[in-house]
Length: 349
Image (cartoon, rainbow, N blue to C red; front, side, top):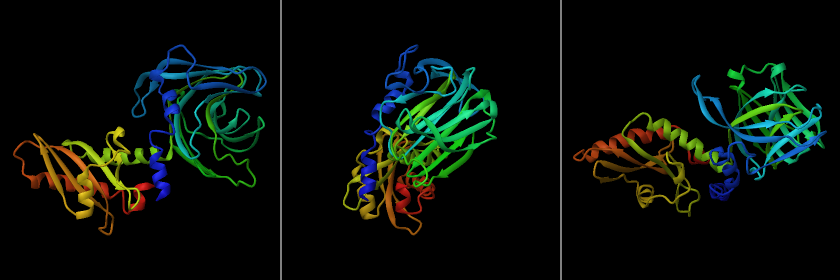
């Protein structure tokens, strides 16, 4: 439980600097992005990164959306040149990340990707794409040289050249998904340089030019909050009357209740309403009303019927609607949420 408390305490603190840098809407167009530093390994000088606007394919559907991106250009014409646009903020030891990128130029060896758990510009892990060979590499760089790794020689097509990369690191287990294909590796720390923490960087080889967009980096607490939000959004879509939805639990037996999931990300980590404690401790339903909005708080039960948390929601409900009807609607939604959390442990994993 102490671990869980520590994870929740990290929300809103660990990655403030990183998240600010990744929010390109706050960066100046045509300028190098703040919060990043250009590094170089091998021959030549470090390349550069510039904040641009461009047409980025939508994550769902084939439309393109105007948005901001980072254009990275390598600084050398030698195949042994590597430019790393490194995020200044230290990444969490364990994390989940995602990015979309495409190669738009380069004559020597057009290759681009993400370096992570970087000790410096010469020692890191790398996930990189070489489109000309439809190839993905996972490589371990030590002292500027690729010393270990594996490759996929038949990566899936990338619409418009935009590759969709999701990746995570937990201990010595690394996972990634490229254009929808999931892969993973659990490396042997006795045989592979064992980097358990470090920085993250946009990476290009030689004179490669590449565009990177939708870069996201999450710590364990943020990963958990995102998962909870996905469950709540899925449930909320089943009933247009839902105005707000919160998932509440105790991180330890003697701790106060916290909001661990919400449709409003800003609420996560905040103290729960007093009704939530009453619901859990007294095994009761609570109903309130403010004009045409009903507020209902119900217990969240595990697969054996034990109370493990609470669900608090606001519902559109015209004045005069019977309390019983509001609670019935809320019960249906709560049961849908319960399917994703069969026990208390599942709330924090």
